[in-house]
Length: 90
View (cartoon, rainbow, N blue to C red):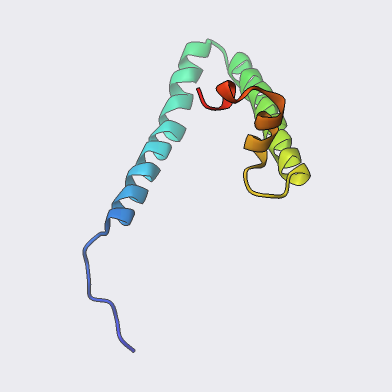
C-alpha cells in the first residue's frame, strides 16, 4: 500500500482553513458580544429564538422554491419571471 508523503497544503486546503476560521470566529465570538449587549438573558434568548424561527421560514421558502423549480437556478428563475431584468442584473 502506497502512502502519500506529500506534506504541503494545496491552495484549496488553505482556502478551506481560512473559511472555517472565519465561520468559527463568528460562531464563537458574536453571541458573547450580543449577550453582553442584550442586558438580560431573557431578551437574549427570546431574540435568538425569534430570529431562529425567521431563519427557519427562510430555509423553508428556499426549499419550496427548489421543489417547484427542479431545474438549476430555480431562485433566479423566480426573480426573472417576477421582476424586470434590471433588478436581476443591476
